[in-house]
Image (cartoon, rainbow, N blue to C red):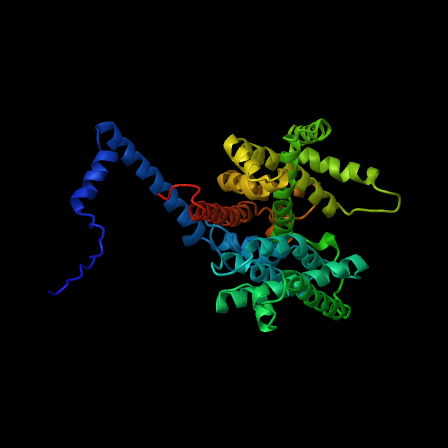
Length: 442
């Protein structure tokens, strides 16, 4: 008797017929006389807007000119993009020395390579990858951007960053090619699979120490021309301030949120007071206070430049807002989760780190990303206190003699840049929600 195996025929979505399309249009856009009139009016407004913007921004626009007068000679009604193009380097890099711009580009490339394993499904130890970026990358990038002499602390942190980057890249390669972590691969290659865990750990620590010493000796020969922070500007400065703020605000917010929920009265009162003080004043006030008050609390002879003061103010301000987001997520976790964690013998930190916080952060993704987007846009306020971020550079175009009075085009270009960055962050957060099953995929 022959056995016939049933094969599954792939189910294909039914093609959308013209009838269903017209039915949808009639139901949603032309279901009544009022809806029909409203639809036609809206389409007319969209047509006027799109045609007007297209005509101003492309058809009648000027892309090549030496000054604003030439733009007017070419077209009185079109956009003068020549001024924006002429200021491209300033918009993206500020007044950073042109012969040293490669350092900014190289720093950005390092960040992309360092974080690339986070998007590779087969890579092991992604938490350590993210932690190494937050802890070490700012020091390596800081020296790369600022240059100058390295103190002993900076040499140690730069060496640590080199080791962390090398381990991260090696781990990514081994994970993709062999589907195992770097630590397991090293132990296997040395033939120490059967050795006790303590012996394996000591071997890995010894190899890491040797690599660190080699990196420390290597970086001693590095010399980078010093670039004053006053020359930093443009989109580069905006990303530096917002990047450090984003990387620091979430850990700071978690600490403050846990402090506010603490059973220790002193910790709870201090955390609550700190949060409420910063949340009760606008960011611009915090920035002004930081640039005027921080020097008063510093030891004699210790000077913080304005950029560091601004970064500290931005981090503290956004950490307080993030604390409330984290606290809301923690309160959404059922009490049974805490009780279950205590039942299996976990202490406070084990409960928070292994059970509660992962669940809370997963459900807080939209609010966290929303706060990050707000932080990115809020950094434009630093132009008011004398830092030439991207908004400061865009406003400076209109003060340049050849492009005197050119206001609209630079601001439109800046709006497009911010939209692209914020939209990308928003789409990635939605992807992360779906990947973590924190929301329904529509």
